[in-house]
Figure: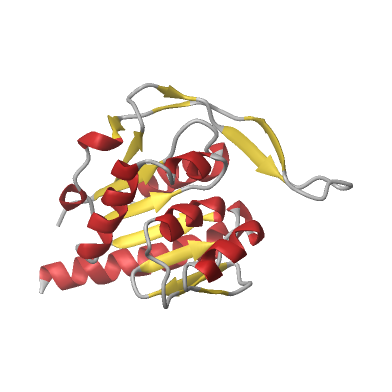
Length: 190
């Protein structure tokens, strides 16, 4: 079984969610690969809440180089897909190659993980119908219109679909991700 994990993001993606995931997979001896619309330096942002604001705020985050263009990716080369949130999912959900790739991961029964606004890609790809998930509170209506059940929990696992509300949910989110990956490894070894 491959040890590669695909992280799918683009400009405006959440810097902390992307970099934390990248480092967390390296720490656990998995091989993270960053995919974006094109292979280049990505402009990532930090998203957080501030007192007095009714929505989240954005600040420039650390940049990151994309290892591969989305169109050059095949799901069979990866054990799982991680979709960080931020603003990137807002425009990536309009890219047919992105949606096709997500459906390919689902068809191959891979672990698919999304945090925050990353859930927008799951709804756009039609992967939420009949599923229970969480995400940023502002994607609840998309989840429900896509036939899913939105729950207000830090992280939710429904089969191989794992979702989290925000970066604050990382502990619960990554426990579920590594449990899913562990099951896949054990199944491949038996």
